[in-house]
Image (cartoon, rainbow, N blue to C red):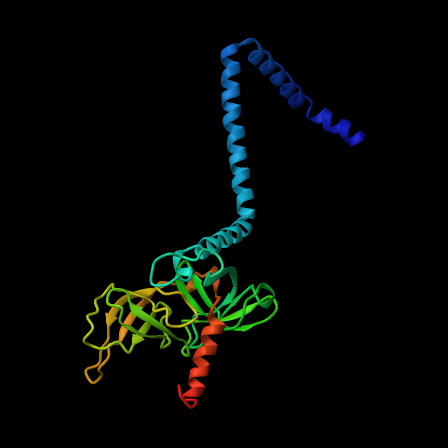
Length: 279
């Protein structure tokens, strides 16, 4: 109590000034219409500014939640694309629900490397969420890699940036297909091999998935042709490809479930056995 009285005694002049100032302003704004309107206008601006900053801060705190929601919405919308449904026959009529071929599950990248010869990604979805080995992984409509191992709530992905990765791709213009591989080094570039030299390829041409593997739908973006690094003694192009996926900025991905993969793999495996085990 003594401290409070000492504080009031020390600052009584300032406190008296503040009280009189508030009293004066209240009289001014209550008796003068112009000043009252100006006060309301400016106070509204200040309050609006405070609310705007509070909303921005709140939105920042919810970024993780917002990103997860957007990833889920993107996966849902991608599942509705025409290429994810089987055709009735050679016509363009789609079977709308029971024969959906691909489904997508959003996942967050929780660990990744890009500077090794055998890089891996870890995502926060596992077999508890329906993820299995050999599922494809994409991001923003471009391929990322293939699930290589799964635990209950996590999965490890072998990305394009792995020297053992190989994927079936094709040139968007001509339809000629080849094999995508990464030789190490720069994480921005990979190579396509086994496209014959008579095929016309130009810088900037698009490289897309062929649809021949059970991992990815047909026509997904892989990258664009950066250069041809052909060797005279070889009969095939050596196509340098600028990858569409920037692995250094990868935050969210979508895991691709091919609903017909088991049937396709089983049939192809049976054929291999009939042919004597030779692939």
